[in-house]
Image (cartoon, rainbow, N blue to C red):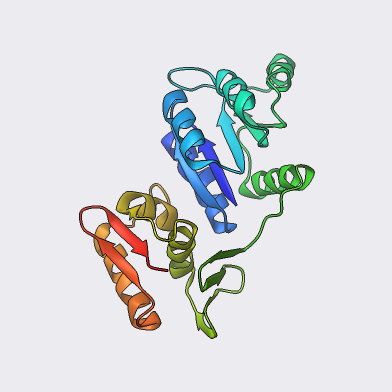
Length: 217
């Protein structure tokens, strides 16, 4: 399940993204109207979470633009709690509305409810080729062999499998694994990849020079 999270506050963007990642979801981040619209068109998310106040255009404008192209579920975020904001969000065909501050548990519950209403199934399993990752059970199956994986390994594999055969840039991996401000760096990522390579043997995580890593399938 891929979620687009749009917020111009880096701390809230990091917290929201991390909560979703901990729940086993892929997260695409954006911090402005322009970057959000590009990510929406490039990444084809299953659900979007939009802040109302954004550089370059409001969350309402972004919701309207997305709705012209897709029926994906949209959850609006705002620090305000006024009826006029709720009415406008619904007029822009948003599916739900959440006022800041909110707890991670409330956010995940709202996202799950939206996915259920939209007929989308939130799966903890990610597959490509002979790879099948179960992020709930912390198991990776490659062909007939099953490996136990750690939470960090699971998040790394989740993004690589979701983009199997394509390079994933280093910064995106760092953000997905450790969060926007989670303390991960390139050296830690190299160590994580090295441990996985030792565990998986010939099942390849390839280094793409000056870019990042790719899963060979």
